[in-house]
Amino acid sequence: MEGTELAKDIAVKKRLSFSDVWDKYSTVLILILMILVFGALEPVAFLGGSNLIKIVEQSAITILLACGEFFAILLAGIDLSVSSTMALTGVVTAKLLVAGVHPFLAVVLGAILLGGLIGALNGGLINATGLPPFIITLGTQAILRGLTLTVSSARAVSGVPVTFTKAMGGKLFGVVPTPILIALITALVLTFFTKKTQAGRNLYAIGGNAQSAWFAGINVKRHTLLAFTIAGICAGLAGMVNIARLGAAEPNAGTGYETFAIAAAIIGGTSFFGGVGVVPKVVVGGLIIGVINNGLNMVGVSSYYQQIAMGALIIVAVTLDRFFGASRKRG
Image 1 (cartoon, rainbow, N blue to C red):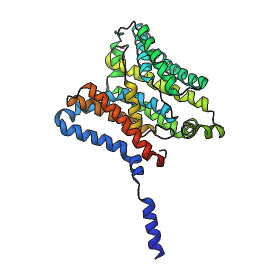
Image 2: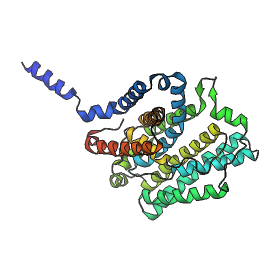
Image 3: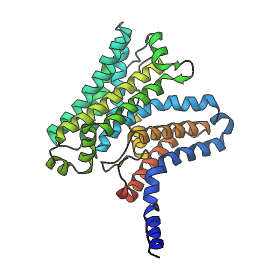
Image 4: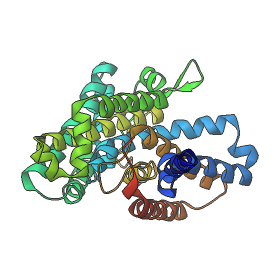
């Protein structure tokens, strides 16, 4: 009799609540649902192998921006400047390439170093002023876009070497898009950082409760600087991938992409209230955004309605996180 009662207790404990199910499977289920919906509407065009590869390739920029945005949101903040960072680093990288700088050095200087410096500037201003990240990055978003227009003279920077576009924007062995490889390698590195390093674990602690983290001896300002620096580097890489795919740098590139990045991170299970989320789910969130954009284009939905859809997705995702995220556990 006692054994039966014990078995029932164990069964009850193992029974998953809706919050548990939402936490574990929501991102993948949403991706599958979107594919099924658009596959039913446009089975030949949407489900064709070339289109699915195109979706993955086009999602690379969103994934890179979302991986950076993830770290800002993990601290219960936000980075609205990622799209402008992407545009500026793209223009600078393109100018270095056109000037004859070695492609590897151009990427390091233009995309990685400049992106990291911009992110560090955001983190430094947040630490120095004590203002919310929303305010700081809203300001730097406008400043960076103005700098991009100034540096480029409001014109596209063309003449990027074909060798660079083929290497960084083409396909490995003629099959696997290089942009998605860059995005996935970046995601793997960041996954290792968050799961296997003390600094990564500290970011979760700060996002959960910054005051408690401070009392535990964690340098909150230093980790804030680190998180926004990572966001800047990811945006810089997105700028590099963008010019590699297009063969030129547009000063207005990435306008509105911060919305895609935020949506991908939130849909990917990152709590808007901080301290919860994992990078792999953010990658899936980026793919969801890619599927939605591609699918809506396939069925002839206007880009205006696509913006409405993205805004609605963010509201729904944050609302669900508000109601069901309390029981979520990291990982």
